[in-house]
Image (tube, rainbow over all chains, first blue to last red):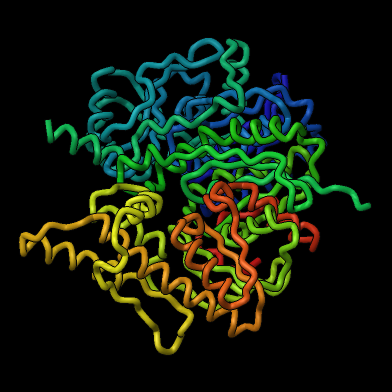
Length: 236
Length: 340
């Protein structure tokens, strides 16, 4: 099984090509957020280096949210365009599951967190189990204190990772009362190889979509929708 | 006979998700438009984030329909074209990323197109005889430009709005008299029942740039008039307001357009953009052209609104000139006319 994977959900742009149990190529850049200009040239680079015939790809995997709204759409539109042109199915990998899968095999709880602004993080809590992940807390947007209390209530050691960690490290230090550690630098941000690896699991479970039906999962409404709803609620 | 050039064009710069297949720049094989207007009505205008979300939901379906209707596959195409500016950045990015991925996967040349150059090129589709040079009056919700089309793909701006676009003024006045969004077609309809000479609204002139436009003063005059009536407890005839406002806009657009044609020594005038389907504007410009011996061109309403067929028309001439964009093509929300 050959998978081409993309993640442009946050600051990191990452592309990977995986075949069965081998990672053929991965290209990850955590520099300026210019995904629109960089993502496809990065993909082209690894496709050429591995002499990949795009028609031999079985699935296109994409980090499908949450994350930066625009970043998600660049990844999704790229995957949808490739899927349409190559007539290949897509696999939507929830961003936080993909991020947690960086630490597949860990015996501790895994808690990825992405800075979601407005004093919140996109987060979830996972436990590595078998070839996949057991979801303890499904991905959601919540305040960091609330998240820390949830982790405390579970009473188990945890590894944290993601771009939310440096932003909220002081809060974590103050609030967490269970043993916790940060993932090392080579594992602490989005990697398309993790999206590819988890997509292999998803593919075996038959969790695929057509390119046409795929859309990002934002976990948040647009500001205009939020304001309209709160106005309507007030009016009632 | 040269080989036919078929281009798949994609447009997502505002609130329409659109795809089309166009042959040799003039023959539309398909023109699929998925409009989001109903969704944005709830907010009284286009909400960029909602527009972007809708684009990504619809884009593959729209492209697939365009290919099916045209009875072609991607293998029959010569290029992929996409609007990369101006417009809403998040909305543009969906079309740009999708077009780049398709062009990459199918090894097809990519041609980025300027949205307004697309609107102007809509005139080529139904007017096989129209060729540059000519003057084009581009009027839409976001743009009001008088453009000299010197040759295919070469443009000179003769006049532009200093503040609101004409379509924007229509939307704001429509909101003020309770017509809702989008305002253009609603004012057009209501104005037919009103007296265009009932209320004298001002027509702004800009001394140092006689071909430029200004609509914010007119918009304020309408709002002041409505306020004044309210304070005095006088009844307002919405139809008269619509007709008088529309007359002021149409007269100024017509006068400047005719002036631009004369000044630049042209013989042809074309209309383009969403407001180009306004019936009063069409009649007024047609009449003025008749009087002045100017040949007049305008697209059907379906080609005035945002669509991808016009992008395919513009892209053909760019393609013929050798314009190609790379995998790093970005959305440029403030792209200038004629800029590459």
